[in-house]
Length: 90
Image 1: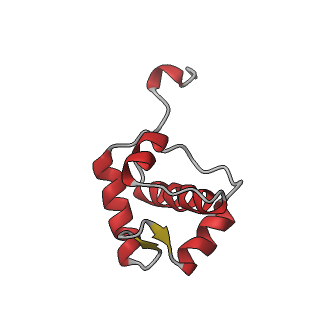
Image 2: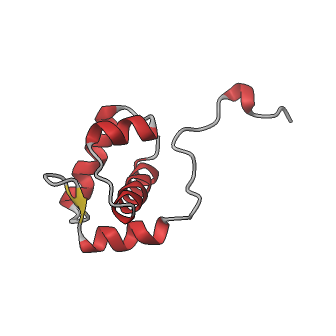
């Protein structure tokens, strides 16, 4: 799993939740994205250190909100590669 794609997906999900006036928690993000809890937690830690997410309040900072809002409506790459059985033979 690409950590940059996961970080972008988290920013997008948190910005969308903020726009809809919903609160997200670690558990709801894990359930929604269907990603391991450890991966979500480590991505949130990196985003917190970069100043994009306030993990204690689980809210975006201004810069995180700007990036997340720009990602709303955008199609991001899949978090996991397609299974080999789904890839067409050449």
